[in-house]
Length: 131
Image 1 (cartoon, rainbow, N blue to C red):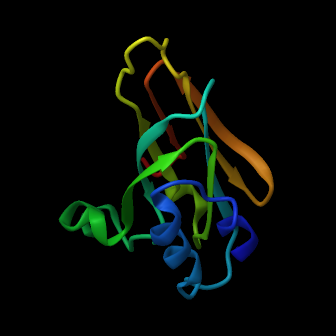
Image 2: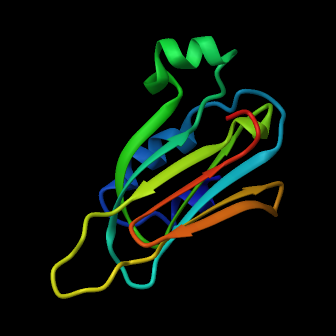
């Protein structure tokens, strides 16, 4: 996981590295979030790093399980979730004058296999089946 942390770029570096240094929740699949775009741009991202025990627990305090950060693309983050079907990432960028849409692209990888990907002009959401 520390190798993945070295790939972080921008303001999300310190926060993301802290998240990768926390103890894993136990044995389980490795989940990796990836954000790319047509050109380097800053994105607001929300992504799950700690698996909630239930949707009720998540709804009661989402930020106990999510990280909200500002990162520059390209960006990656790896975590361990007992059930990778909880994985979710929301990516959004503001419009930039004199530039076209950055074409936000997100991916979720589970155990080295691409599980889901999505692209949008300014926003992209990738999520697995628990959502």
